[in-house]
Image (cartoon, rainbow, N blue to C red; front, top):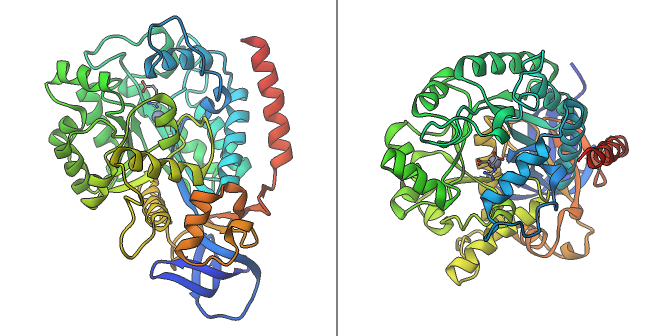
Length: 456
Ligand code: NGQ
Ligand code: ZN
């Protein structure tokens, strides 16, 4: 077996709280031993944290970041007009493009301090909807990107079968996503085989896209397919979606889901923005993770998650970069808190008397992200995958700060330039803020984007 890796941190956030002079031993990708008050040893870092899981990404959307900020012909631009542009954009993408974009965005995630990503993958087929010769071609490209970047991957092949919850056919922009359940099962199996190239921390889950894109039967079949796998679904993001579901099912999305499925800790509900108080409390009690994507939700004009009520009821949450319009972990957490302050007209609304805002946000999202990804990480604890991140204590905003104040300074005053080192399941991928393959991955992304712009 490989020699254990030794880290030593001036300060570290452990499950029992902050500790000084912490020595961490990593063996076979997992935390093997943690000792506080230890003499300096091995690789020295300043502030060691469990690394975050990015619980929701559509990798390809990274390449359209910043391209949808103009008014269109519609009287009102919205999520739905954005979605049309997104469909038009993705129709140009080849498997090579997807691999290059995915590698680039995974590299950015790692450099931002994420150790893993749950990729909600629905771009399966050729333009027009014909499958590739290899049904799981696009899944293989996501996997290949993860092999290159080393990011911890929870791959979520997406079931997408209809154009709306009345069961209408897929729209022309949705042809590349579509599978009936049987073909989806084969696609997911093929994706699982492709994942043999990944290290042992990789996870295969599944994702019925939404109650709009999957019928009641489809959701039930997906739930039964892999009873232990993480299951993710978009839920209650937009007002029009709530209205559509009420018209078809006579219930609101979260209300319907909680009444018809045994929603529990293996579920991750993405957005959960449009909920009535009873729905918020019901979701909090279920043990599922609310997958919040604050930067994207602001960009798309979704609305504001009822966070104070949800966290007050013990609800679990994590964060995702979703549309990948911006990869920024500190900003993702800050945006979440600021949305709550603006809604509540108060400050530090998620903090508790014992724990600062930054601490509540970070510890909550790191645990929820790991749960949602089906990944044994989210804490610097013996037996967990060594998903670790270190902040640079020499940064000006961290002068003289310790404990919770470090997290508050990073999240509210700083940004991801403070992220110095990242390990994913013991793989040391980011050093001094840069991914080991930063230049090669960036060069390929440049070439890919230039060619793509030429074709559009
Ligand atoms: C997606 N994104 O699957 O990329 C969706 C848009 C839809 C967000 N919901 C498509 N943010 O929901 O129909
Ligand atoms: Zn999404």
